[in-house]
Length: 236
Image (cartoon, rainbow, N blue to C red; front, side, top):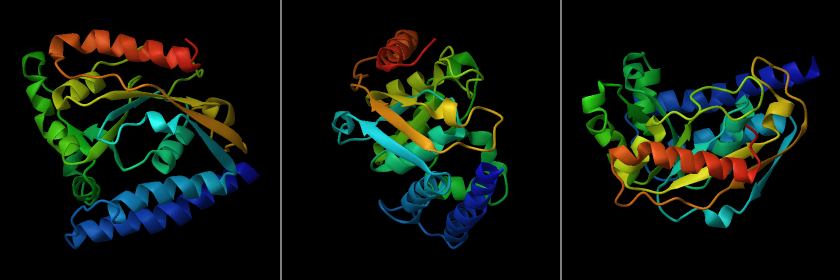
C-alpha cells in the first residue's frame, strides 16, 4: 500500500508539474533548444519518480555512449525502465511514437514541440521512406530510445525484437547503442502499481555502427543487438 501511495503521489506531483509545463510551453510556441523545458521535463520526471519510489540507479560503462545522436535499444520489463532511461541517458533523449497520435489534442502538439520522434506505419514498399522525418529529427541532435520488443515483457525475459527500430537507425545512419535495464522487473513487473524500493543497473553496450547499411540489413542488425543484450545479462 505504501508503495502504491508513493507511486501515485509521484505521478501527481511530477507529471502534473513537468507535463503541465511541456503543454503550457507548447501552447505558447516555445521551441526546442538543448537543455530547455523539453529536455528537463523528461529527466526531472524520471528522477522524481525514482526518488519517490526509493529506487537507486547505477550506470555501467556510460563512456561507451558516443558524443553524437544515437538510437538506444533497450529491453522493456517495467515502467521503471522509462524513468531510469530518461533520468540517466545524456543529451536530448526522446521516445518514438505513432504519428497518428499527432491528432490527439494537446498531447500531439506537446510531442511535436518536444521533438519526440514520429513513425508512420506504411505498406512495406514505402516503409524505409516513412522514416525520413524521424531521421531528420535525429540529425538535429535528438537521440531516440526504443523498446525493440514492442511491449513490456510479462515474465522479465527478453522477447523477440521488432525490426522498426533498426530501420530507423539505418535510415538515420547513426549507431545503435544496446541498453540492458537490470532488476526493474523484480521491483515492478507489468501490471503492478506498487514498486518495491531497491537498486537497478543500466548496462551500456558498445555502439553498433550502421554506416553503409541498407533496409535489407535490418534483420541482421536486430539479431546482433539482441545478442548484445543477452551478453550483458538479459535472459531469453
